[in-house]
Image (cartoon, helix red, strand yellow):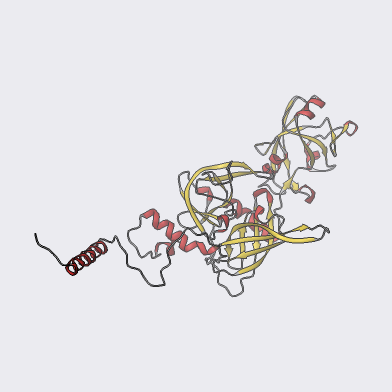
Length: 410
């Protein structure tokens, strides 16, 4: 048996350790420490930063295909995600608001409002977002991808489609813009991408598919938005107003709401189709509102107590309590209630004996919000078909819409 001295044992031990380290490094199992420029990812939650966007007024399909990732091992799906994000994320803004509340002395005091997302749609600083993002806002701030912040102005609002247009002055800053796509050409199963600011994390990308089309969805204001896009792309609080994009980077929808018992994303999100925005945005910029058609009546939504009290033959629909004298409803032959049969109902007086409207422009109208939704894309001068009951007799007429009075705005 050969004996080794302590020095020899120490030499063999150190040599063996060095050899083992070299082997591990060779197989990539151990990384040598780098300089101060490398930052390791941690689980620490950082404060979200405001952001800025760059876009062009034309779709950047060519630019998307030329995006350099520096890595040829990405799958086709990953390359699309990266290319769309790198091209479009600078066109998505973070919107913050201030609202006014009253202190103990009944004095107005500013306080933080909500947050949301928006898309720059014009190089002059026009932004498309949701109505509910800027609802009741006293001040609106637009935060760009580079951390710069601008005070914005609400140019126009359309509560019935949950859309709003903001404007800020970019000065000499060159803005990136998002081009509108064509939501009428969408297919269930098509890939879509959402960019927004969920929970304050700027320019977050989520992906998914179109799960359904033409969905009627009721909002918090009890309005029904028709033709909504359903997607399983994760949409969370803060995503509202951000773009839903197709694989070429075009906006096909405006992310608006989720269906979730818990408040978090469960794979059922809804977006307003971009074709709706294409229709209403020019009016919002020009006049601040959408000039919709109207039927000159005072409608009352039927409920069981009204039906029982008046012994009505129809349980669902809109009772015509009054018609405007000389208005389009009277000219078309619609009858209002008897002035001698007025009954106080809450704060209002209902006049019974009038016609009961059950359908407008092919849409069932059992609630007041149904009536607003049925007339949403009709303008003054348009003709609509109206189905109604007079007693037990069903009738149908054609009526030319008038301009909706401001007092009837939702």
